[in-house]
Length: 319
Image (cartoon, rainbow, N blue to C red):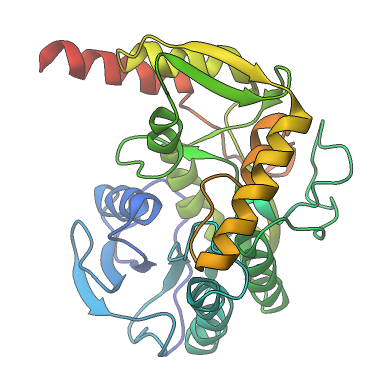
């Protein structure tokens, strides 16, 4: 079939959109946003999405059925911090790289929006203001490497690639839950001094996914309007969840030593490390994304961490 071009307006009538990973956090938000705009929704993955038709797809093992689809938004991904050489690392590559290759082949001439991650960026150069041409090497874990390989395939095929950082919002099962689980005896240890960090509201990412089909092929950073002070943001998160904890700044050398020890133990056990160099890096160094390219296409981030935490506090009061 010849793919129809999605309309330029906010509504998406008569457009059939395939969302991979629609049962997950980011994919679920994209699927709901597409349905709210009147799109005909096809959810691909191992479980049904929040609405629309469902087509089973195991990204690690088979090609997706994209028949009758006009636009593909690829959110499905394996996430985590698996030990090197573990089965989980192999599965991550099978999903994030091989699954991407299968998806792109099945998509043929259809427009594809591929959700990547700021984890593709090299952690060694300064990340005080990261533009899309920042080097993509030196990755500290399999996730960064596999997302970089996957998005390279997508870019070569002419897809639009979105690079959010630290996505948060309703339904988050990774970022904030992991942070909250680190509180011990009223103390939360964070590596190094306070830094500035970009975060991405999942609603803003979903809006970008639906708008991006009309953008020129290439990579685009997606983040909140302004970066956050790490310590202030973490304190706000703790208070909104009713957790009283003191933030302790762990010396960076000690954090790196603990991460190396945890990684060595994980390699022996074949499990995910309790602490990794990647996790330390994500919290210990300023990482600010330049979103000018996306802003120039007419996208604008409309949610902030304060908006989300206000909703969390409101829900807690009503419970």
